Length: 423
Length: 49
Image (cartoon, rainbow over all chains, first blue to last red):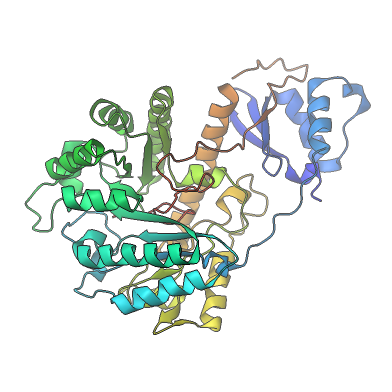
């Protein structure tokens, strides 16, 4: 059991008011400087003076100390074998400014046989009845529509035969939809996630079509309208850069006005070493929290990966993915999808042949990368949420950039805790 | 802030349990607990493309 004193953190905010946070017990409260002194003494000694008996701070500590929590257990990395992610190809009809897969563009496409092997593999495991299949880039998944359609039909056939329930997710740029395709997506209950930067002036600049001249806003906007008219409500996932970091409230308002059926938005800070300055991160937090306040009032759930992290206690940021690339490699991160990536070998741990071949040594190496923590993690209040951060980001960024992200993560957690304590 | 800093007496705001389930994705099939049901990694949700 983890004692309360090891699970209690003082987070400085402003005006001599701190947040006292117990991450494993999932509890928090504000404290003034006198209460903070008492708590700091408690953290040091595990005791609270009897003279404070009957005070709220004493009662809170007593209440929290009665909650028994265990050290979170590390999950084995291969427990995700009921979830598989496909990168069907490296072909894309867009040329987005921040695309992580730009370097990997090629005509390479995964074969039906390899998709079959992967689907059969996850369906061999009978201990978990819910199977998840995601289609993501690399390339735009709908660039290879016939292959995508064949895949979802095969998934349906196998999961129904075995009596499994299934989730099929599609992350698409939204440009290659039409009525026929939408009906098929709906028929298969595919969860559609559109990568879209919402405001015309941002979408057209950051997400042009691949000729670099044609804009994409109208096309995606009309396709979202078409999805909605068929009752298939997508989620929107926007990338936040220096260009739109202060525009998040406007983005939410645009969605409310134009796509009132959409209730799930995801605004993620870009992973770009040029954009990710301390000023960018500060602006991001202010703008995101303002956008969140607007979205909350409208019943829209606005999130990002940091909020995902706050919802759970974890020992590592990522358990690794079971992601099949167009070259039929198995990688633990969909962003590292081809051997043109410098760190490709560090994320690759198997291959799809007629079966699934897992390389145990490479898998252990992947595990080791996932387990790595910074020297600053051990006494950090956010350690159970961040859990050392994204291994892919650690692989591509400098120590200075990682520290900058670390500060951002802590400031974001603080902002969300303040929101929850104030609300 | 829900409290005022009176330096001589310990003051605390309301104790809140802040880690609670987020609303389930109405679009998601059979999953109320997953961050990004069927749309990529539930860990990072960071598909910038």
